[in-house]
Length: 437
Ligand SMILES: [Fe+2]
Image (cartoon, rainbow, N blue to C red; front, side):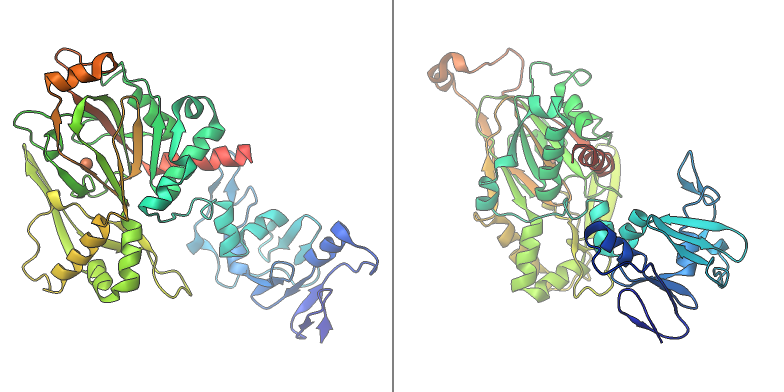
């Protein structure tokens, strides 16, 4: 038996290799002694300082960071995982696996040498550390209710700050990714054309615009003989947009250009929170909503779009987890197609219970958008709605006096909207945070 520097007893098949330093050495030097403590097995090497993580040789060789494995200018992999010989191993003897203060060096039997930096090994040594590296822990979704979101100081942010400072943009993206809802104040609203509107600049500051059949940007205003209920003055219940697309857009932005109406209150609700409440109190209903397909379609105006989705979509199972996390929600009654005839009858009361939680005043956040305000929300999680509205009468306008602008020919309630994707947004926030922190 060997005894390693970390005090671990190792079998005779394993070879412990370490630096021995006097016991009075403390601080950083003492950490070095721990780091250099490893043991070799037949098909892997164990690094004791990294919670005894066992690194299989096949994983190490496949993850080799040398210029022969990773093309330096592109940082892309030059071999396929399937190319690695299944019995790949280091040469025998002390040169096979060497550990230094900076990392691990492996000399392979085929003559290749791989160097792994200590920081790199630490990053991959546990799922938690890897999650931290990708900032997934800091950007994890957190559910909210009306009270909790109302008290959130970061819910309303200044456009001037977001436009001029990457740190402020990072805070804005944090709020949007974590809670799925962010308001921005003082977004210029004079320019209303699709090409020059400020909305495009807001969208490009956060991410990249996503074109749909509605265009790159679009106008929400009451239109005679509208092809979409959104473009009327009717009450529009809680819903998500474009559930009938293969890949619905992640985030939506609505910029209020004009608002001189009575009504037209915006409502938002965290459907993730509602799904969690359902899971906790009605697990049978929750299971039904995760397994019963609901069809959505857009069969109008020369289009034929159709998709089936579960109301609550679970994420892929994680090894060792007791239950699957909720990935996103698919709920859009106005765009629902007839359900399959085979839909279990228990699905209907289950959906009713979910709808009751969604519409519970404890969960709905109401806000009347003012001119120059923009709202950004997660279209795969936060539902949006709008109450009906009507134009102000002449008398009501007179009462409000000069504070209200009503331009000839302009709609009295006018929002300009667009969609943006998650990828560019997450890319941006990770880069900003790495630079700012
Ligand atoms: Fe909508």
